[in-house]
Structure formats: C-alpha cells, structure tokens
Image (cartoon, rainbow, N blue to C red; front, side, top):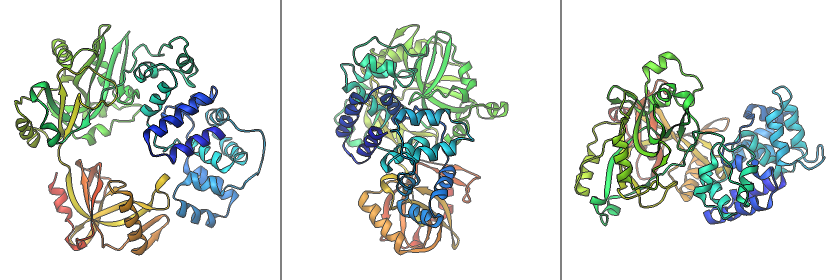
Length: 517
C-alpha cells in the first residue's frame, strides 16, 4: 500500500497534466503485477469492490476515539476518509506489510458480517497515508484529478503503443490487466472479452462566435445538440450492447432499445426519451438511468430512443478513417429509421449568421445548442481540437441568496464550498438548488470568510447563514420536481458571479424561476 498511497498523495497535490502523466508513467513502470493493475482499475473507476458505507466507517471510528473529538475533527477536516486516517490510533496491530492486492482481496471477498472487523484490522496495520489510500479505495472516492483517459495516455507513454491502440482494446479486458501490461511490454495483443466491443468516442470542444469568424462555413455540417446522453450502440457477432460515452454497459436499463438494434455494426448517437416525435426533458431520461430492471409501466411511459449522429463500423468494415461526409452518406443509405431509432437532421445554413439565428430559436426546449463538425474529419477518439465543436445555448441566470453552507471535501476540506441558495416567495426564502463550483480559488476564500462571519445556526456540518449575500446562479435547464420544496429542479447549477453589490431584498422571486419553464 505504500507505493499506492504515495501515488495518490502525489497526484492529489500535483496540478499540471504533464506532471501527473509523469507520475503515473513512473508508477506503472516501477510497480509489479498485480498491484499496478489494481491501481489502474481504481483510478479509472472500473474496479468493482464491496463499497464501504460512511455509517460503517463512522461506527468503527467511534469505537476507537472519543465521539465528540471525532465530530469536531471531521467538521474541521471536512473529509471522512482523511479524518479517520489521521485520527485512527497508530501501531495498534503491526504486522507484515499490506499490499494493494491484499486490500483489494479483503474488499472483494470478505462477507458483510465479517467486513467491519476486517477493515478495523487492516487499518491497525497501516500508517496514516496508507489508511487514507485504503479508505479511498473502500469508498470508491479517488478524487485525485485523474481521468480514465489520462491514465490510458500514461500507459501508452510507458510503451511504443499509442493511446488509440490502448483504448481500442481497453473495454472488456480482465482485471488486473496483466495481459495489457504484457502487451505494452512487447507481448501479444490481448483480445477484448466482448465480441461487441466499445470503441472510444469522439468528443467536441466549446466554441464562441469569435472563434467561428475565420472558419469557412462551407467546410462544416451543423446539427442540433440534444439534451440526452451520448451513447454507442453496438450489434456485432450476435451480441447487442449499449455503452455510455465512458464505455459503461447501460443496456440493462434500456431493453426496449437493445431489442431495436437490428443491424451489424456500431453507431454513435444521443439516448433520449421520445414520445412519438416529441423529445422529453432530460429528467424523464434520468428516471431510467442506472436501473438494473425496468418495469413494464416505465417502458411504456418513458420509451427510450436513439437519435443517430455517426456510424463507426458496418458489416465488418471500419468506417472511422473516412471523412464525416462519407460516413454521413453511409448512415443515410442504411435503413435505420424506426419508432426507436432515427437520424439527427442536418441544419441548413450558408453563413455563420444563419446558424446564429437557428441557435437562437431552436424548435424544442430540450435542445442545448448546435454541433459544428468538419465535413472532412475522420472519427478520432478523444477530444481533438478542431474537427467537432459544440456551441451551447446561453445558460439561464437568476440572482439568489445564499442560505446554507457546508464544508467541502478533498482539496476543499477546511473551506465552506457547498452552498444552498434560495429565492423570495413573498417574505420567505425558499431553497431552490445547490452549487459547488463556478467560483475561483480566491472567491472561495472570500465565500468561506463570509460563511464564518455570518452563521446564525449550526446543524452538524451545515451552517445556516444570515440572508445577506446574493449570487448569480447559471444553469442549463429546469424541470418540475415534486422532491423539492420549490417544485423545481435545476440542471448543472453553478455560481457564475458573486453579487457583493446587490442587496438581498433585490434577489429574484420564485415566480421568476417558475416563469422560465
């Protein structure tokens, strides 16, 4: 665990992308199997372990340290795993060194009844940094600033293989990836376990009107950006799969769409809930995401559909190297259209001004903006700058009052960074959402000072604030929600501006938000 703990610590306190890649590459090169494979699985969020609940960890800590001391420490540190790692008594049960493989085995194979004692036993044998690494593993909360893509780039840097080659075989490989590391060292190419494999998706980059000026509109296609989730549908070798853009198999939640994949190939598109021709709000799709089983009533009331953007393979032929114009022509020539699958239409425009007008008046509220794609671009995994752009619609904005604050976690532990905000409903402030980001590090310090000076009550880790500070909140969408007191739920809310200049009485009314529906 020492090497793994050191890895997580260095990653957490290293900001630069290239520096993180160097740290990862050195770790993978210096660490033997199977520990490096388990570390890779943990960093890429593909390691399936028995997840340890916060309540269990609190109970274990309560058996070793004073309850009030632990509560005060947790309130100060702000992160449960870090608090336990620091406060756990040292040297309770020294023994042989614990490896990462030992930790994985414990969390994979220990039964529910024996798990608390096993966790306490292994914590007794670890140092504070190792305890933190183990608890991050046990809770599934790495939070060290490493994406799965970055980890795979680091793997490629340890060998003569390209990251595209690594991603081509990544999904379906067996953990702890001994065959993958052997291939990177010059061995035989491992074959994915699935005969309907995921192909890494191509992603877009944001663009502004100023960025469009030097570009020739004749060289681009444009289409609507639909408010669903990006998926890849694969039907090959008798197997049918529906993957999220990160490669997670989500087909169990969408058996109605899986049944409609009557072709031999792989396509790229947007997963939506669609009733006849009307695309439902994202909140309707969200009700089906993450389910292992879907009831007949849900299948009928929230029918899944796929709106196609691109085609990757067809009847054994890899189409990704072809220009987008050729792939689009192939997509249009295939009879995909059904009550479940249709084709995303191209938008007619001759100049960027035409596209600006279209973006300003979309035909449906569930459209997030427009996608702009080079006609000659091949399908390239990852997020290359230039071939595909997204020009999202301007966010909705309201002025709200901060009413509650809670300590952050990880790098933000010790700062109040999680905020609940409200709008006026008559003379009352009604909570309408929470925001955790959108502000700079300097603004975070200012907000933290405000919270500490203007707390009126405490409820455990939560502070109630005097209704004094107005913040501008930007968000991407709005839905009715019976789970919230306001009856509304925002999508992707963030603090876009701190209104130190604005009196709280001049913040927006709840009716203003309702009118945005």
